[in-house]
Image 1: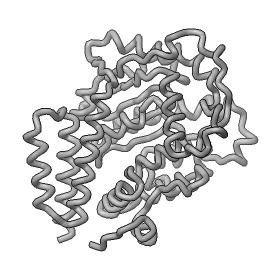
Image 2: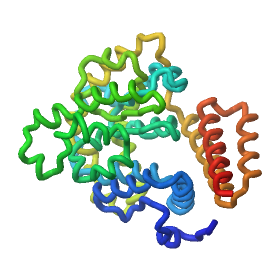
Image 3: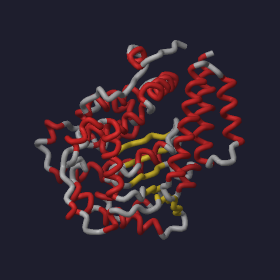
Length: 361
């Protein structure tokens, strides 16, 4: 297995896919991610290894970062838009039917929360080979980002929707000019989620994560989702926006003066939508199947420790060091401080890496 010593060498390898900060458009970003999703498992693993080594993040993590970065707009944040402290105070994350989703009793999970609240990070702790992770943002103007062939690689559920019941929503910016809002934005999210619920019932061999603010924006009745898993990030509006700002500043410190007003488009609308999030929280908070967990510095530290272990697995894989992966696997099983969820993440990664190495030999 060839070993590259810098990013430029790795970028020349046509069997790998990377997402770097040289990407300047959302269309280019999505095309890169679709190519990554279509890679064989071995090439995905190697792409993630070099992405981690040279960029500090896996390819999916870079996709989330760049997606946020490309969406940032320069809008001022008026303090008069903060009439209530509820916009500043975070609450515990809510997990409804978490056990049922983990066990496969229900195979669809909806993740809600403000932009920047950590929905994608929450989804990544659940992802695996049998999970289709869908971001509802990708529904809009999808023709500008995906050909129908590319949709097959991105998501079976997306492809089935846009090639069937949702064919009329397969449009780009040019067609959008001739479609009234009430026939497009006001319907596509409702129709897709309705389709997704039925699709998941028919494909019980897979799990599905559907993430986005559009769930609480377009569904006033939380009871619709009572039979499924629902996770709600408790991160406050203000903290969510500061996170987006902080991510940008870490990468673009030289642009600080040009980004004074980058709290994002629709700030006033997001504040008004706080009541809609709270309606979902109130409905699921009283359920006996609901658990709450605080987002703490300790949990962030735990995530970082797991991340370091996964990087070690990647390095062993590149060296074709099966014994090293087995050692990590045994250490994980014996580690009494790791949560069961984090043990499962490391365990699955080790088993998958060993399987890939066995297939190569």
